[in-house]
Length: 567
Image (cartoon, helix red, strand yellow):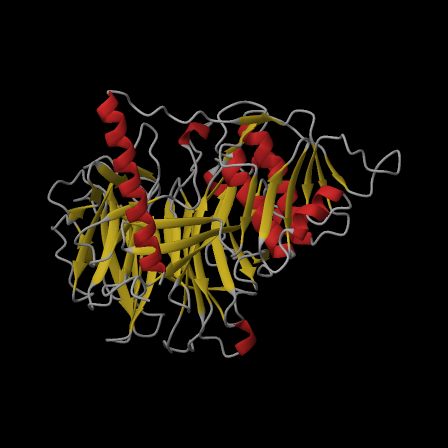
């Protein structure tokens, strides 16, 4: 049904557009570009419901930060029952959040009567901007819609762009709808920000002041589905690296969500224990074992990371957890190498059902014959690992293939992406094989490309059976060449990688925000197909610039909902 509705909607728009263009052509005139409309919100304050849900309170705080970072305006936030005169001022300029005691909130909420529980409305009146949902979840989504549509689109200081209209009602729980040429209908919801500036409570002791947190990067995510305790299945676990530009202060963190990403809490931080001279842990990958490996039952969580002191040594180390990520113990070191110029990086774990082996793919700088190469080791018990097997080793020793990511597709083939840092400006290539042990290491593969668009740096990929006969394959990276600064599209294929389309990034970011060289905005995005294969979880670093011009680290999360065009 979605396909047919979207098809006729698009067909109607195309015919209407052709008619209008032909009319102007006959007159020798061109249609005028619609002028953008703006509203100056200087003098406004943000007023939220006094008894608002905690999630709404957090979203309101994030909206204030977004307004400051995007249009340079710092607005005060108050609650609706606070007023020196003990009565609301009907002439005050206010952004009203949730079910406030203002009549404008009540009137807007009345328009949602009979609509779904999590619907919301955004309405702009003479001196009020109203954002309210039937539920707390609806209000949260309304805040996000307002930020995306009215604030982030603005190109003028102190003003929001209101070209989208002064009244908007949404009946279902998405922020953005993406339609790719009659192939895929995708709803995208940006639901949560994981990290703002620093970490809470006891997890900040090694970081110093909040300003010392200079970056967040290398996210990885999984949805638990093999836990012996059924209550843990369905939880999301996310990890990422944080720290300052001082490499030795980098640390890993484990975050948990019990509501599909609406809210997150940090639950653990793995520590280096096998080599106490090493202080940094970075470039980690989280993986849940789907079957028994050695003494590890299905559901064991593996945190494989780069335990490193960049000046002299690096390890591919593995921590494991038997209690859904709450506690971790360093278990094994898979490989050892030197420092920054001779190190090993970026592990990617995979259990192969067909042969019962646990694989660890990683980038290897330690071979003197190659500037860098991609390799793997494998193990039957998780403790004893094989010799190195090459995946990418090119004839030109200066080529640097790195940052391996892989997905198994419905046709039985394994699809992998990597970046070629020196050889082709960090552009992303992909290769496929029917045998996970055989990759033809001298074959460079195929450039990830759509028309003139090419992807580059920090790749990731995933595949889901939803989206058509061949399912949906998604690949992405830090950059693409679609503009002066890149538009950071996601690359999507519906035929196992033979052809590609692009779709807008549901977590947009701009490299105009780069404030210093070690800022890694957009670095190493993460994708994971949920237990429901129509849902893809997505994380990325989308740092922003604060009012003082400093880059603020931010890790964001989104859910992508796919619809089979035949459904």
